[in-house]
Length: 155
Image (tube, helix red, strand yellow):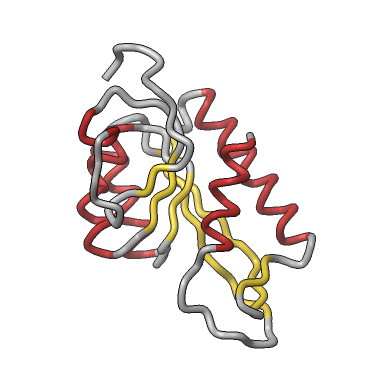
């Protein structure tokens, strides 16, 4: 829960290039989660609770501009194909520039090129045994937040 809150807060406080204004605007934050898996459902519920609390408290203020958060969640069905489709929908249709809490390595890997191409910040925390994620040196492709060592040999 702490990692979720920190990841969402990082996106909301580190948004570059925002000008000051008086009206409340909306910032779209996406999440692609395995909603057929308990951790995915729990993460979705926690994110919805955090967003409701941020918005009820007046939203987030960045450089003088107030924002309410709109959370958009899609199911990756724990597969690369569904994950890539969900990422493409968030980026191209919903115009999301920030993703949080991606759980599936397959989704992260299948979306990495799109994150890079479209300059989408993907903040994810968790464990992975995939060297291509764990040893990434390309900061713009995917930002890892609070990584932990692999929990098992599962790829």
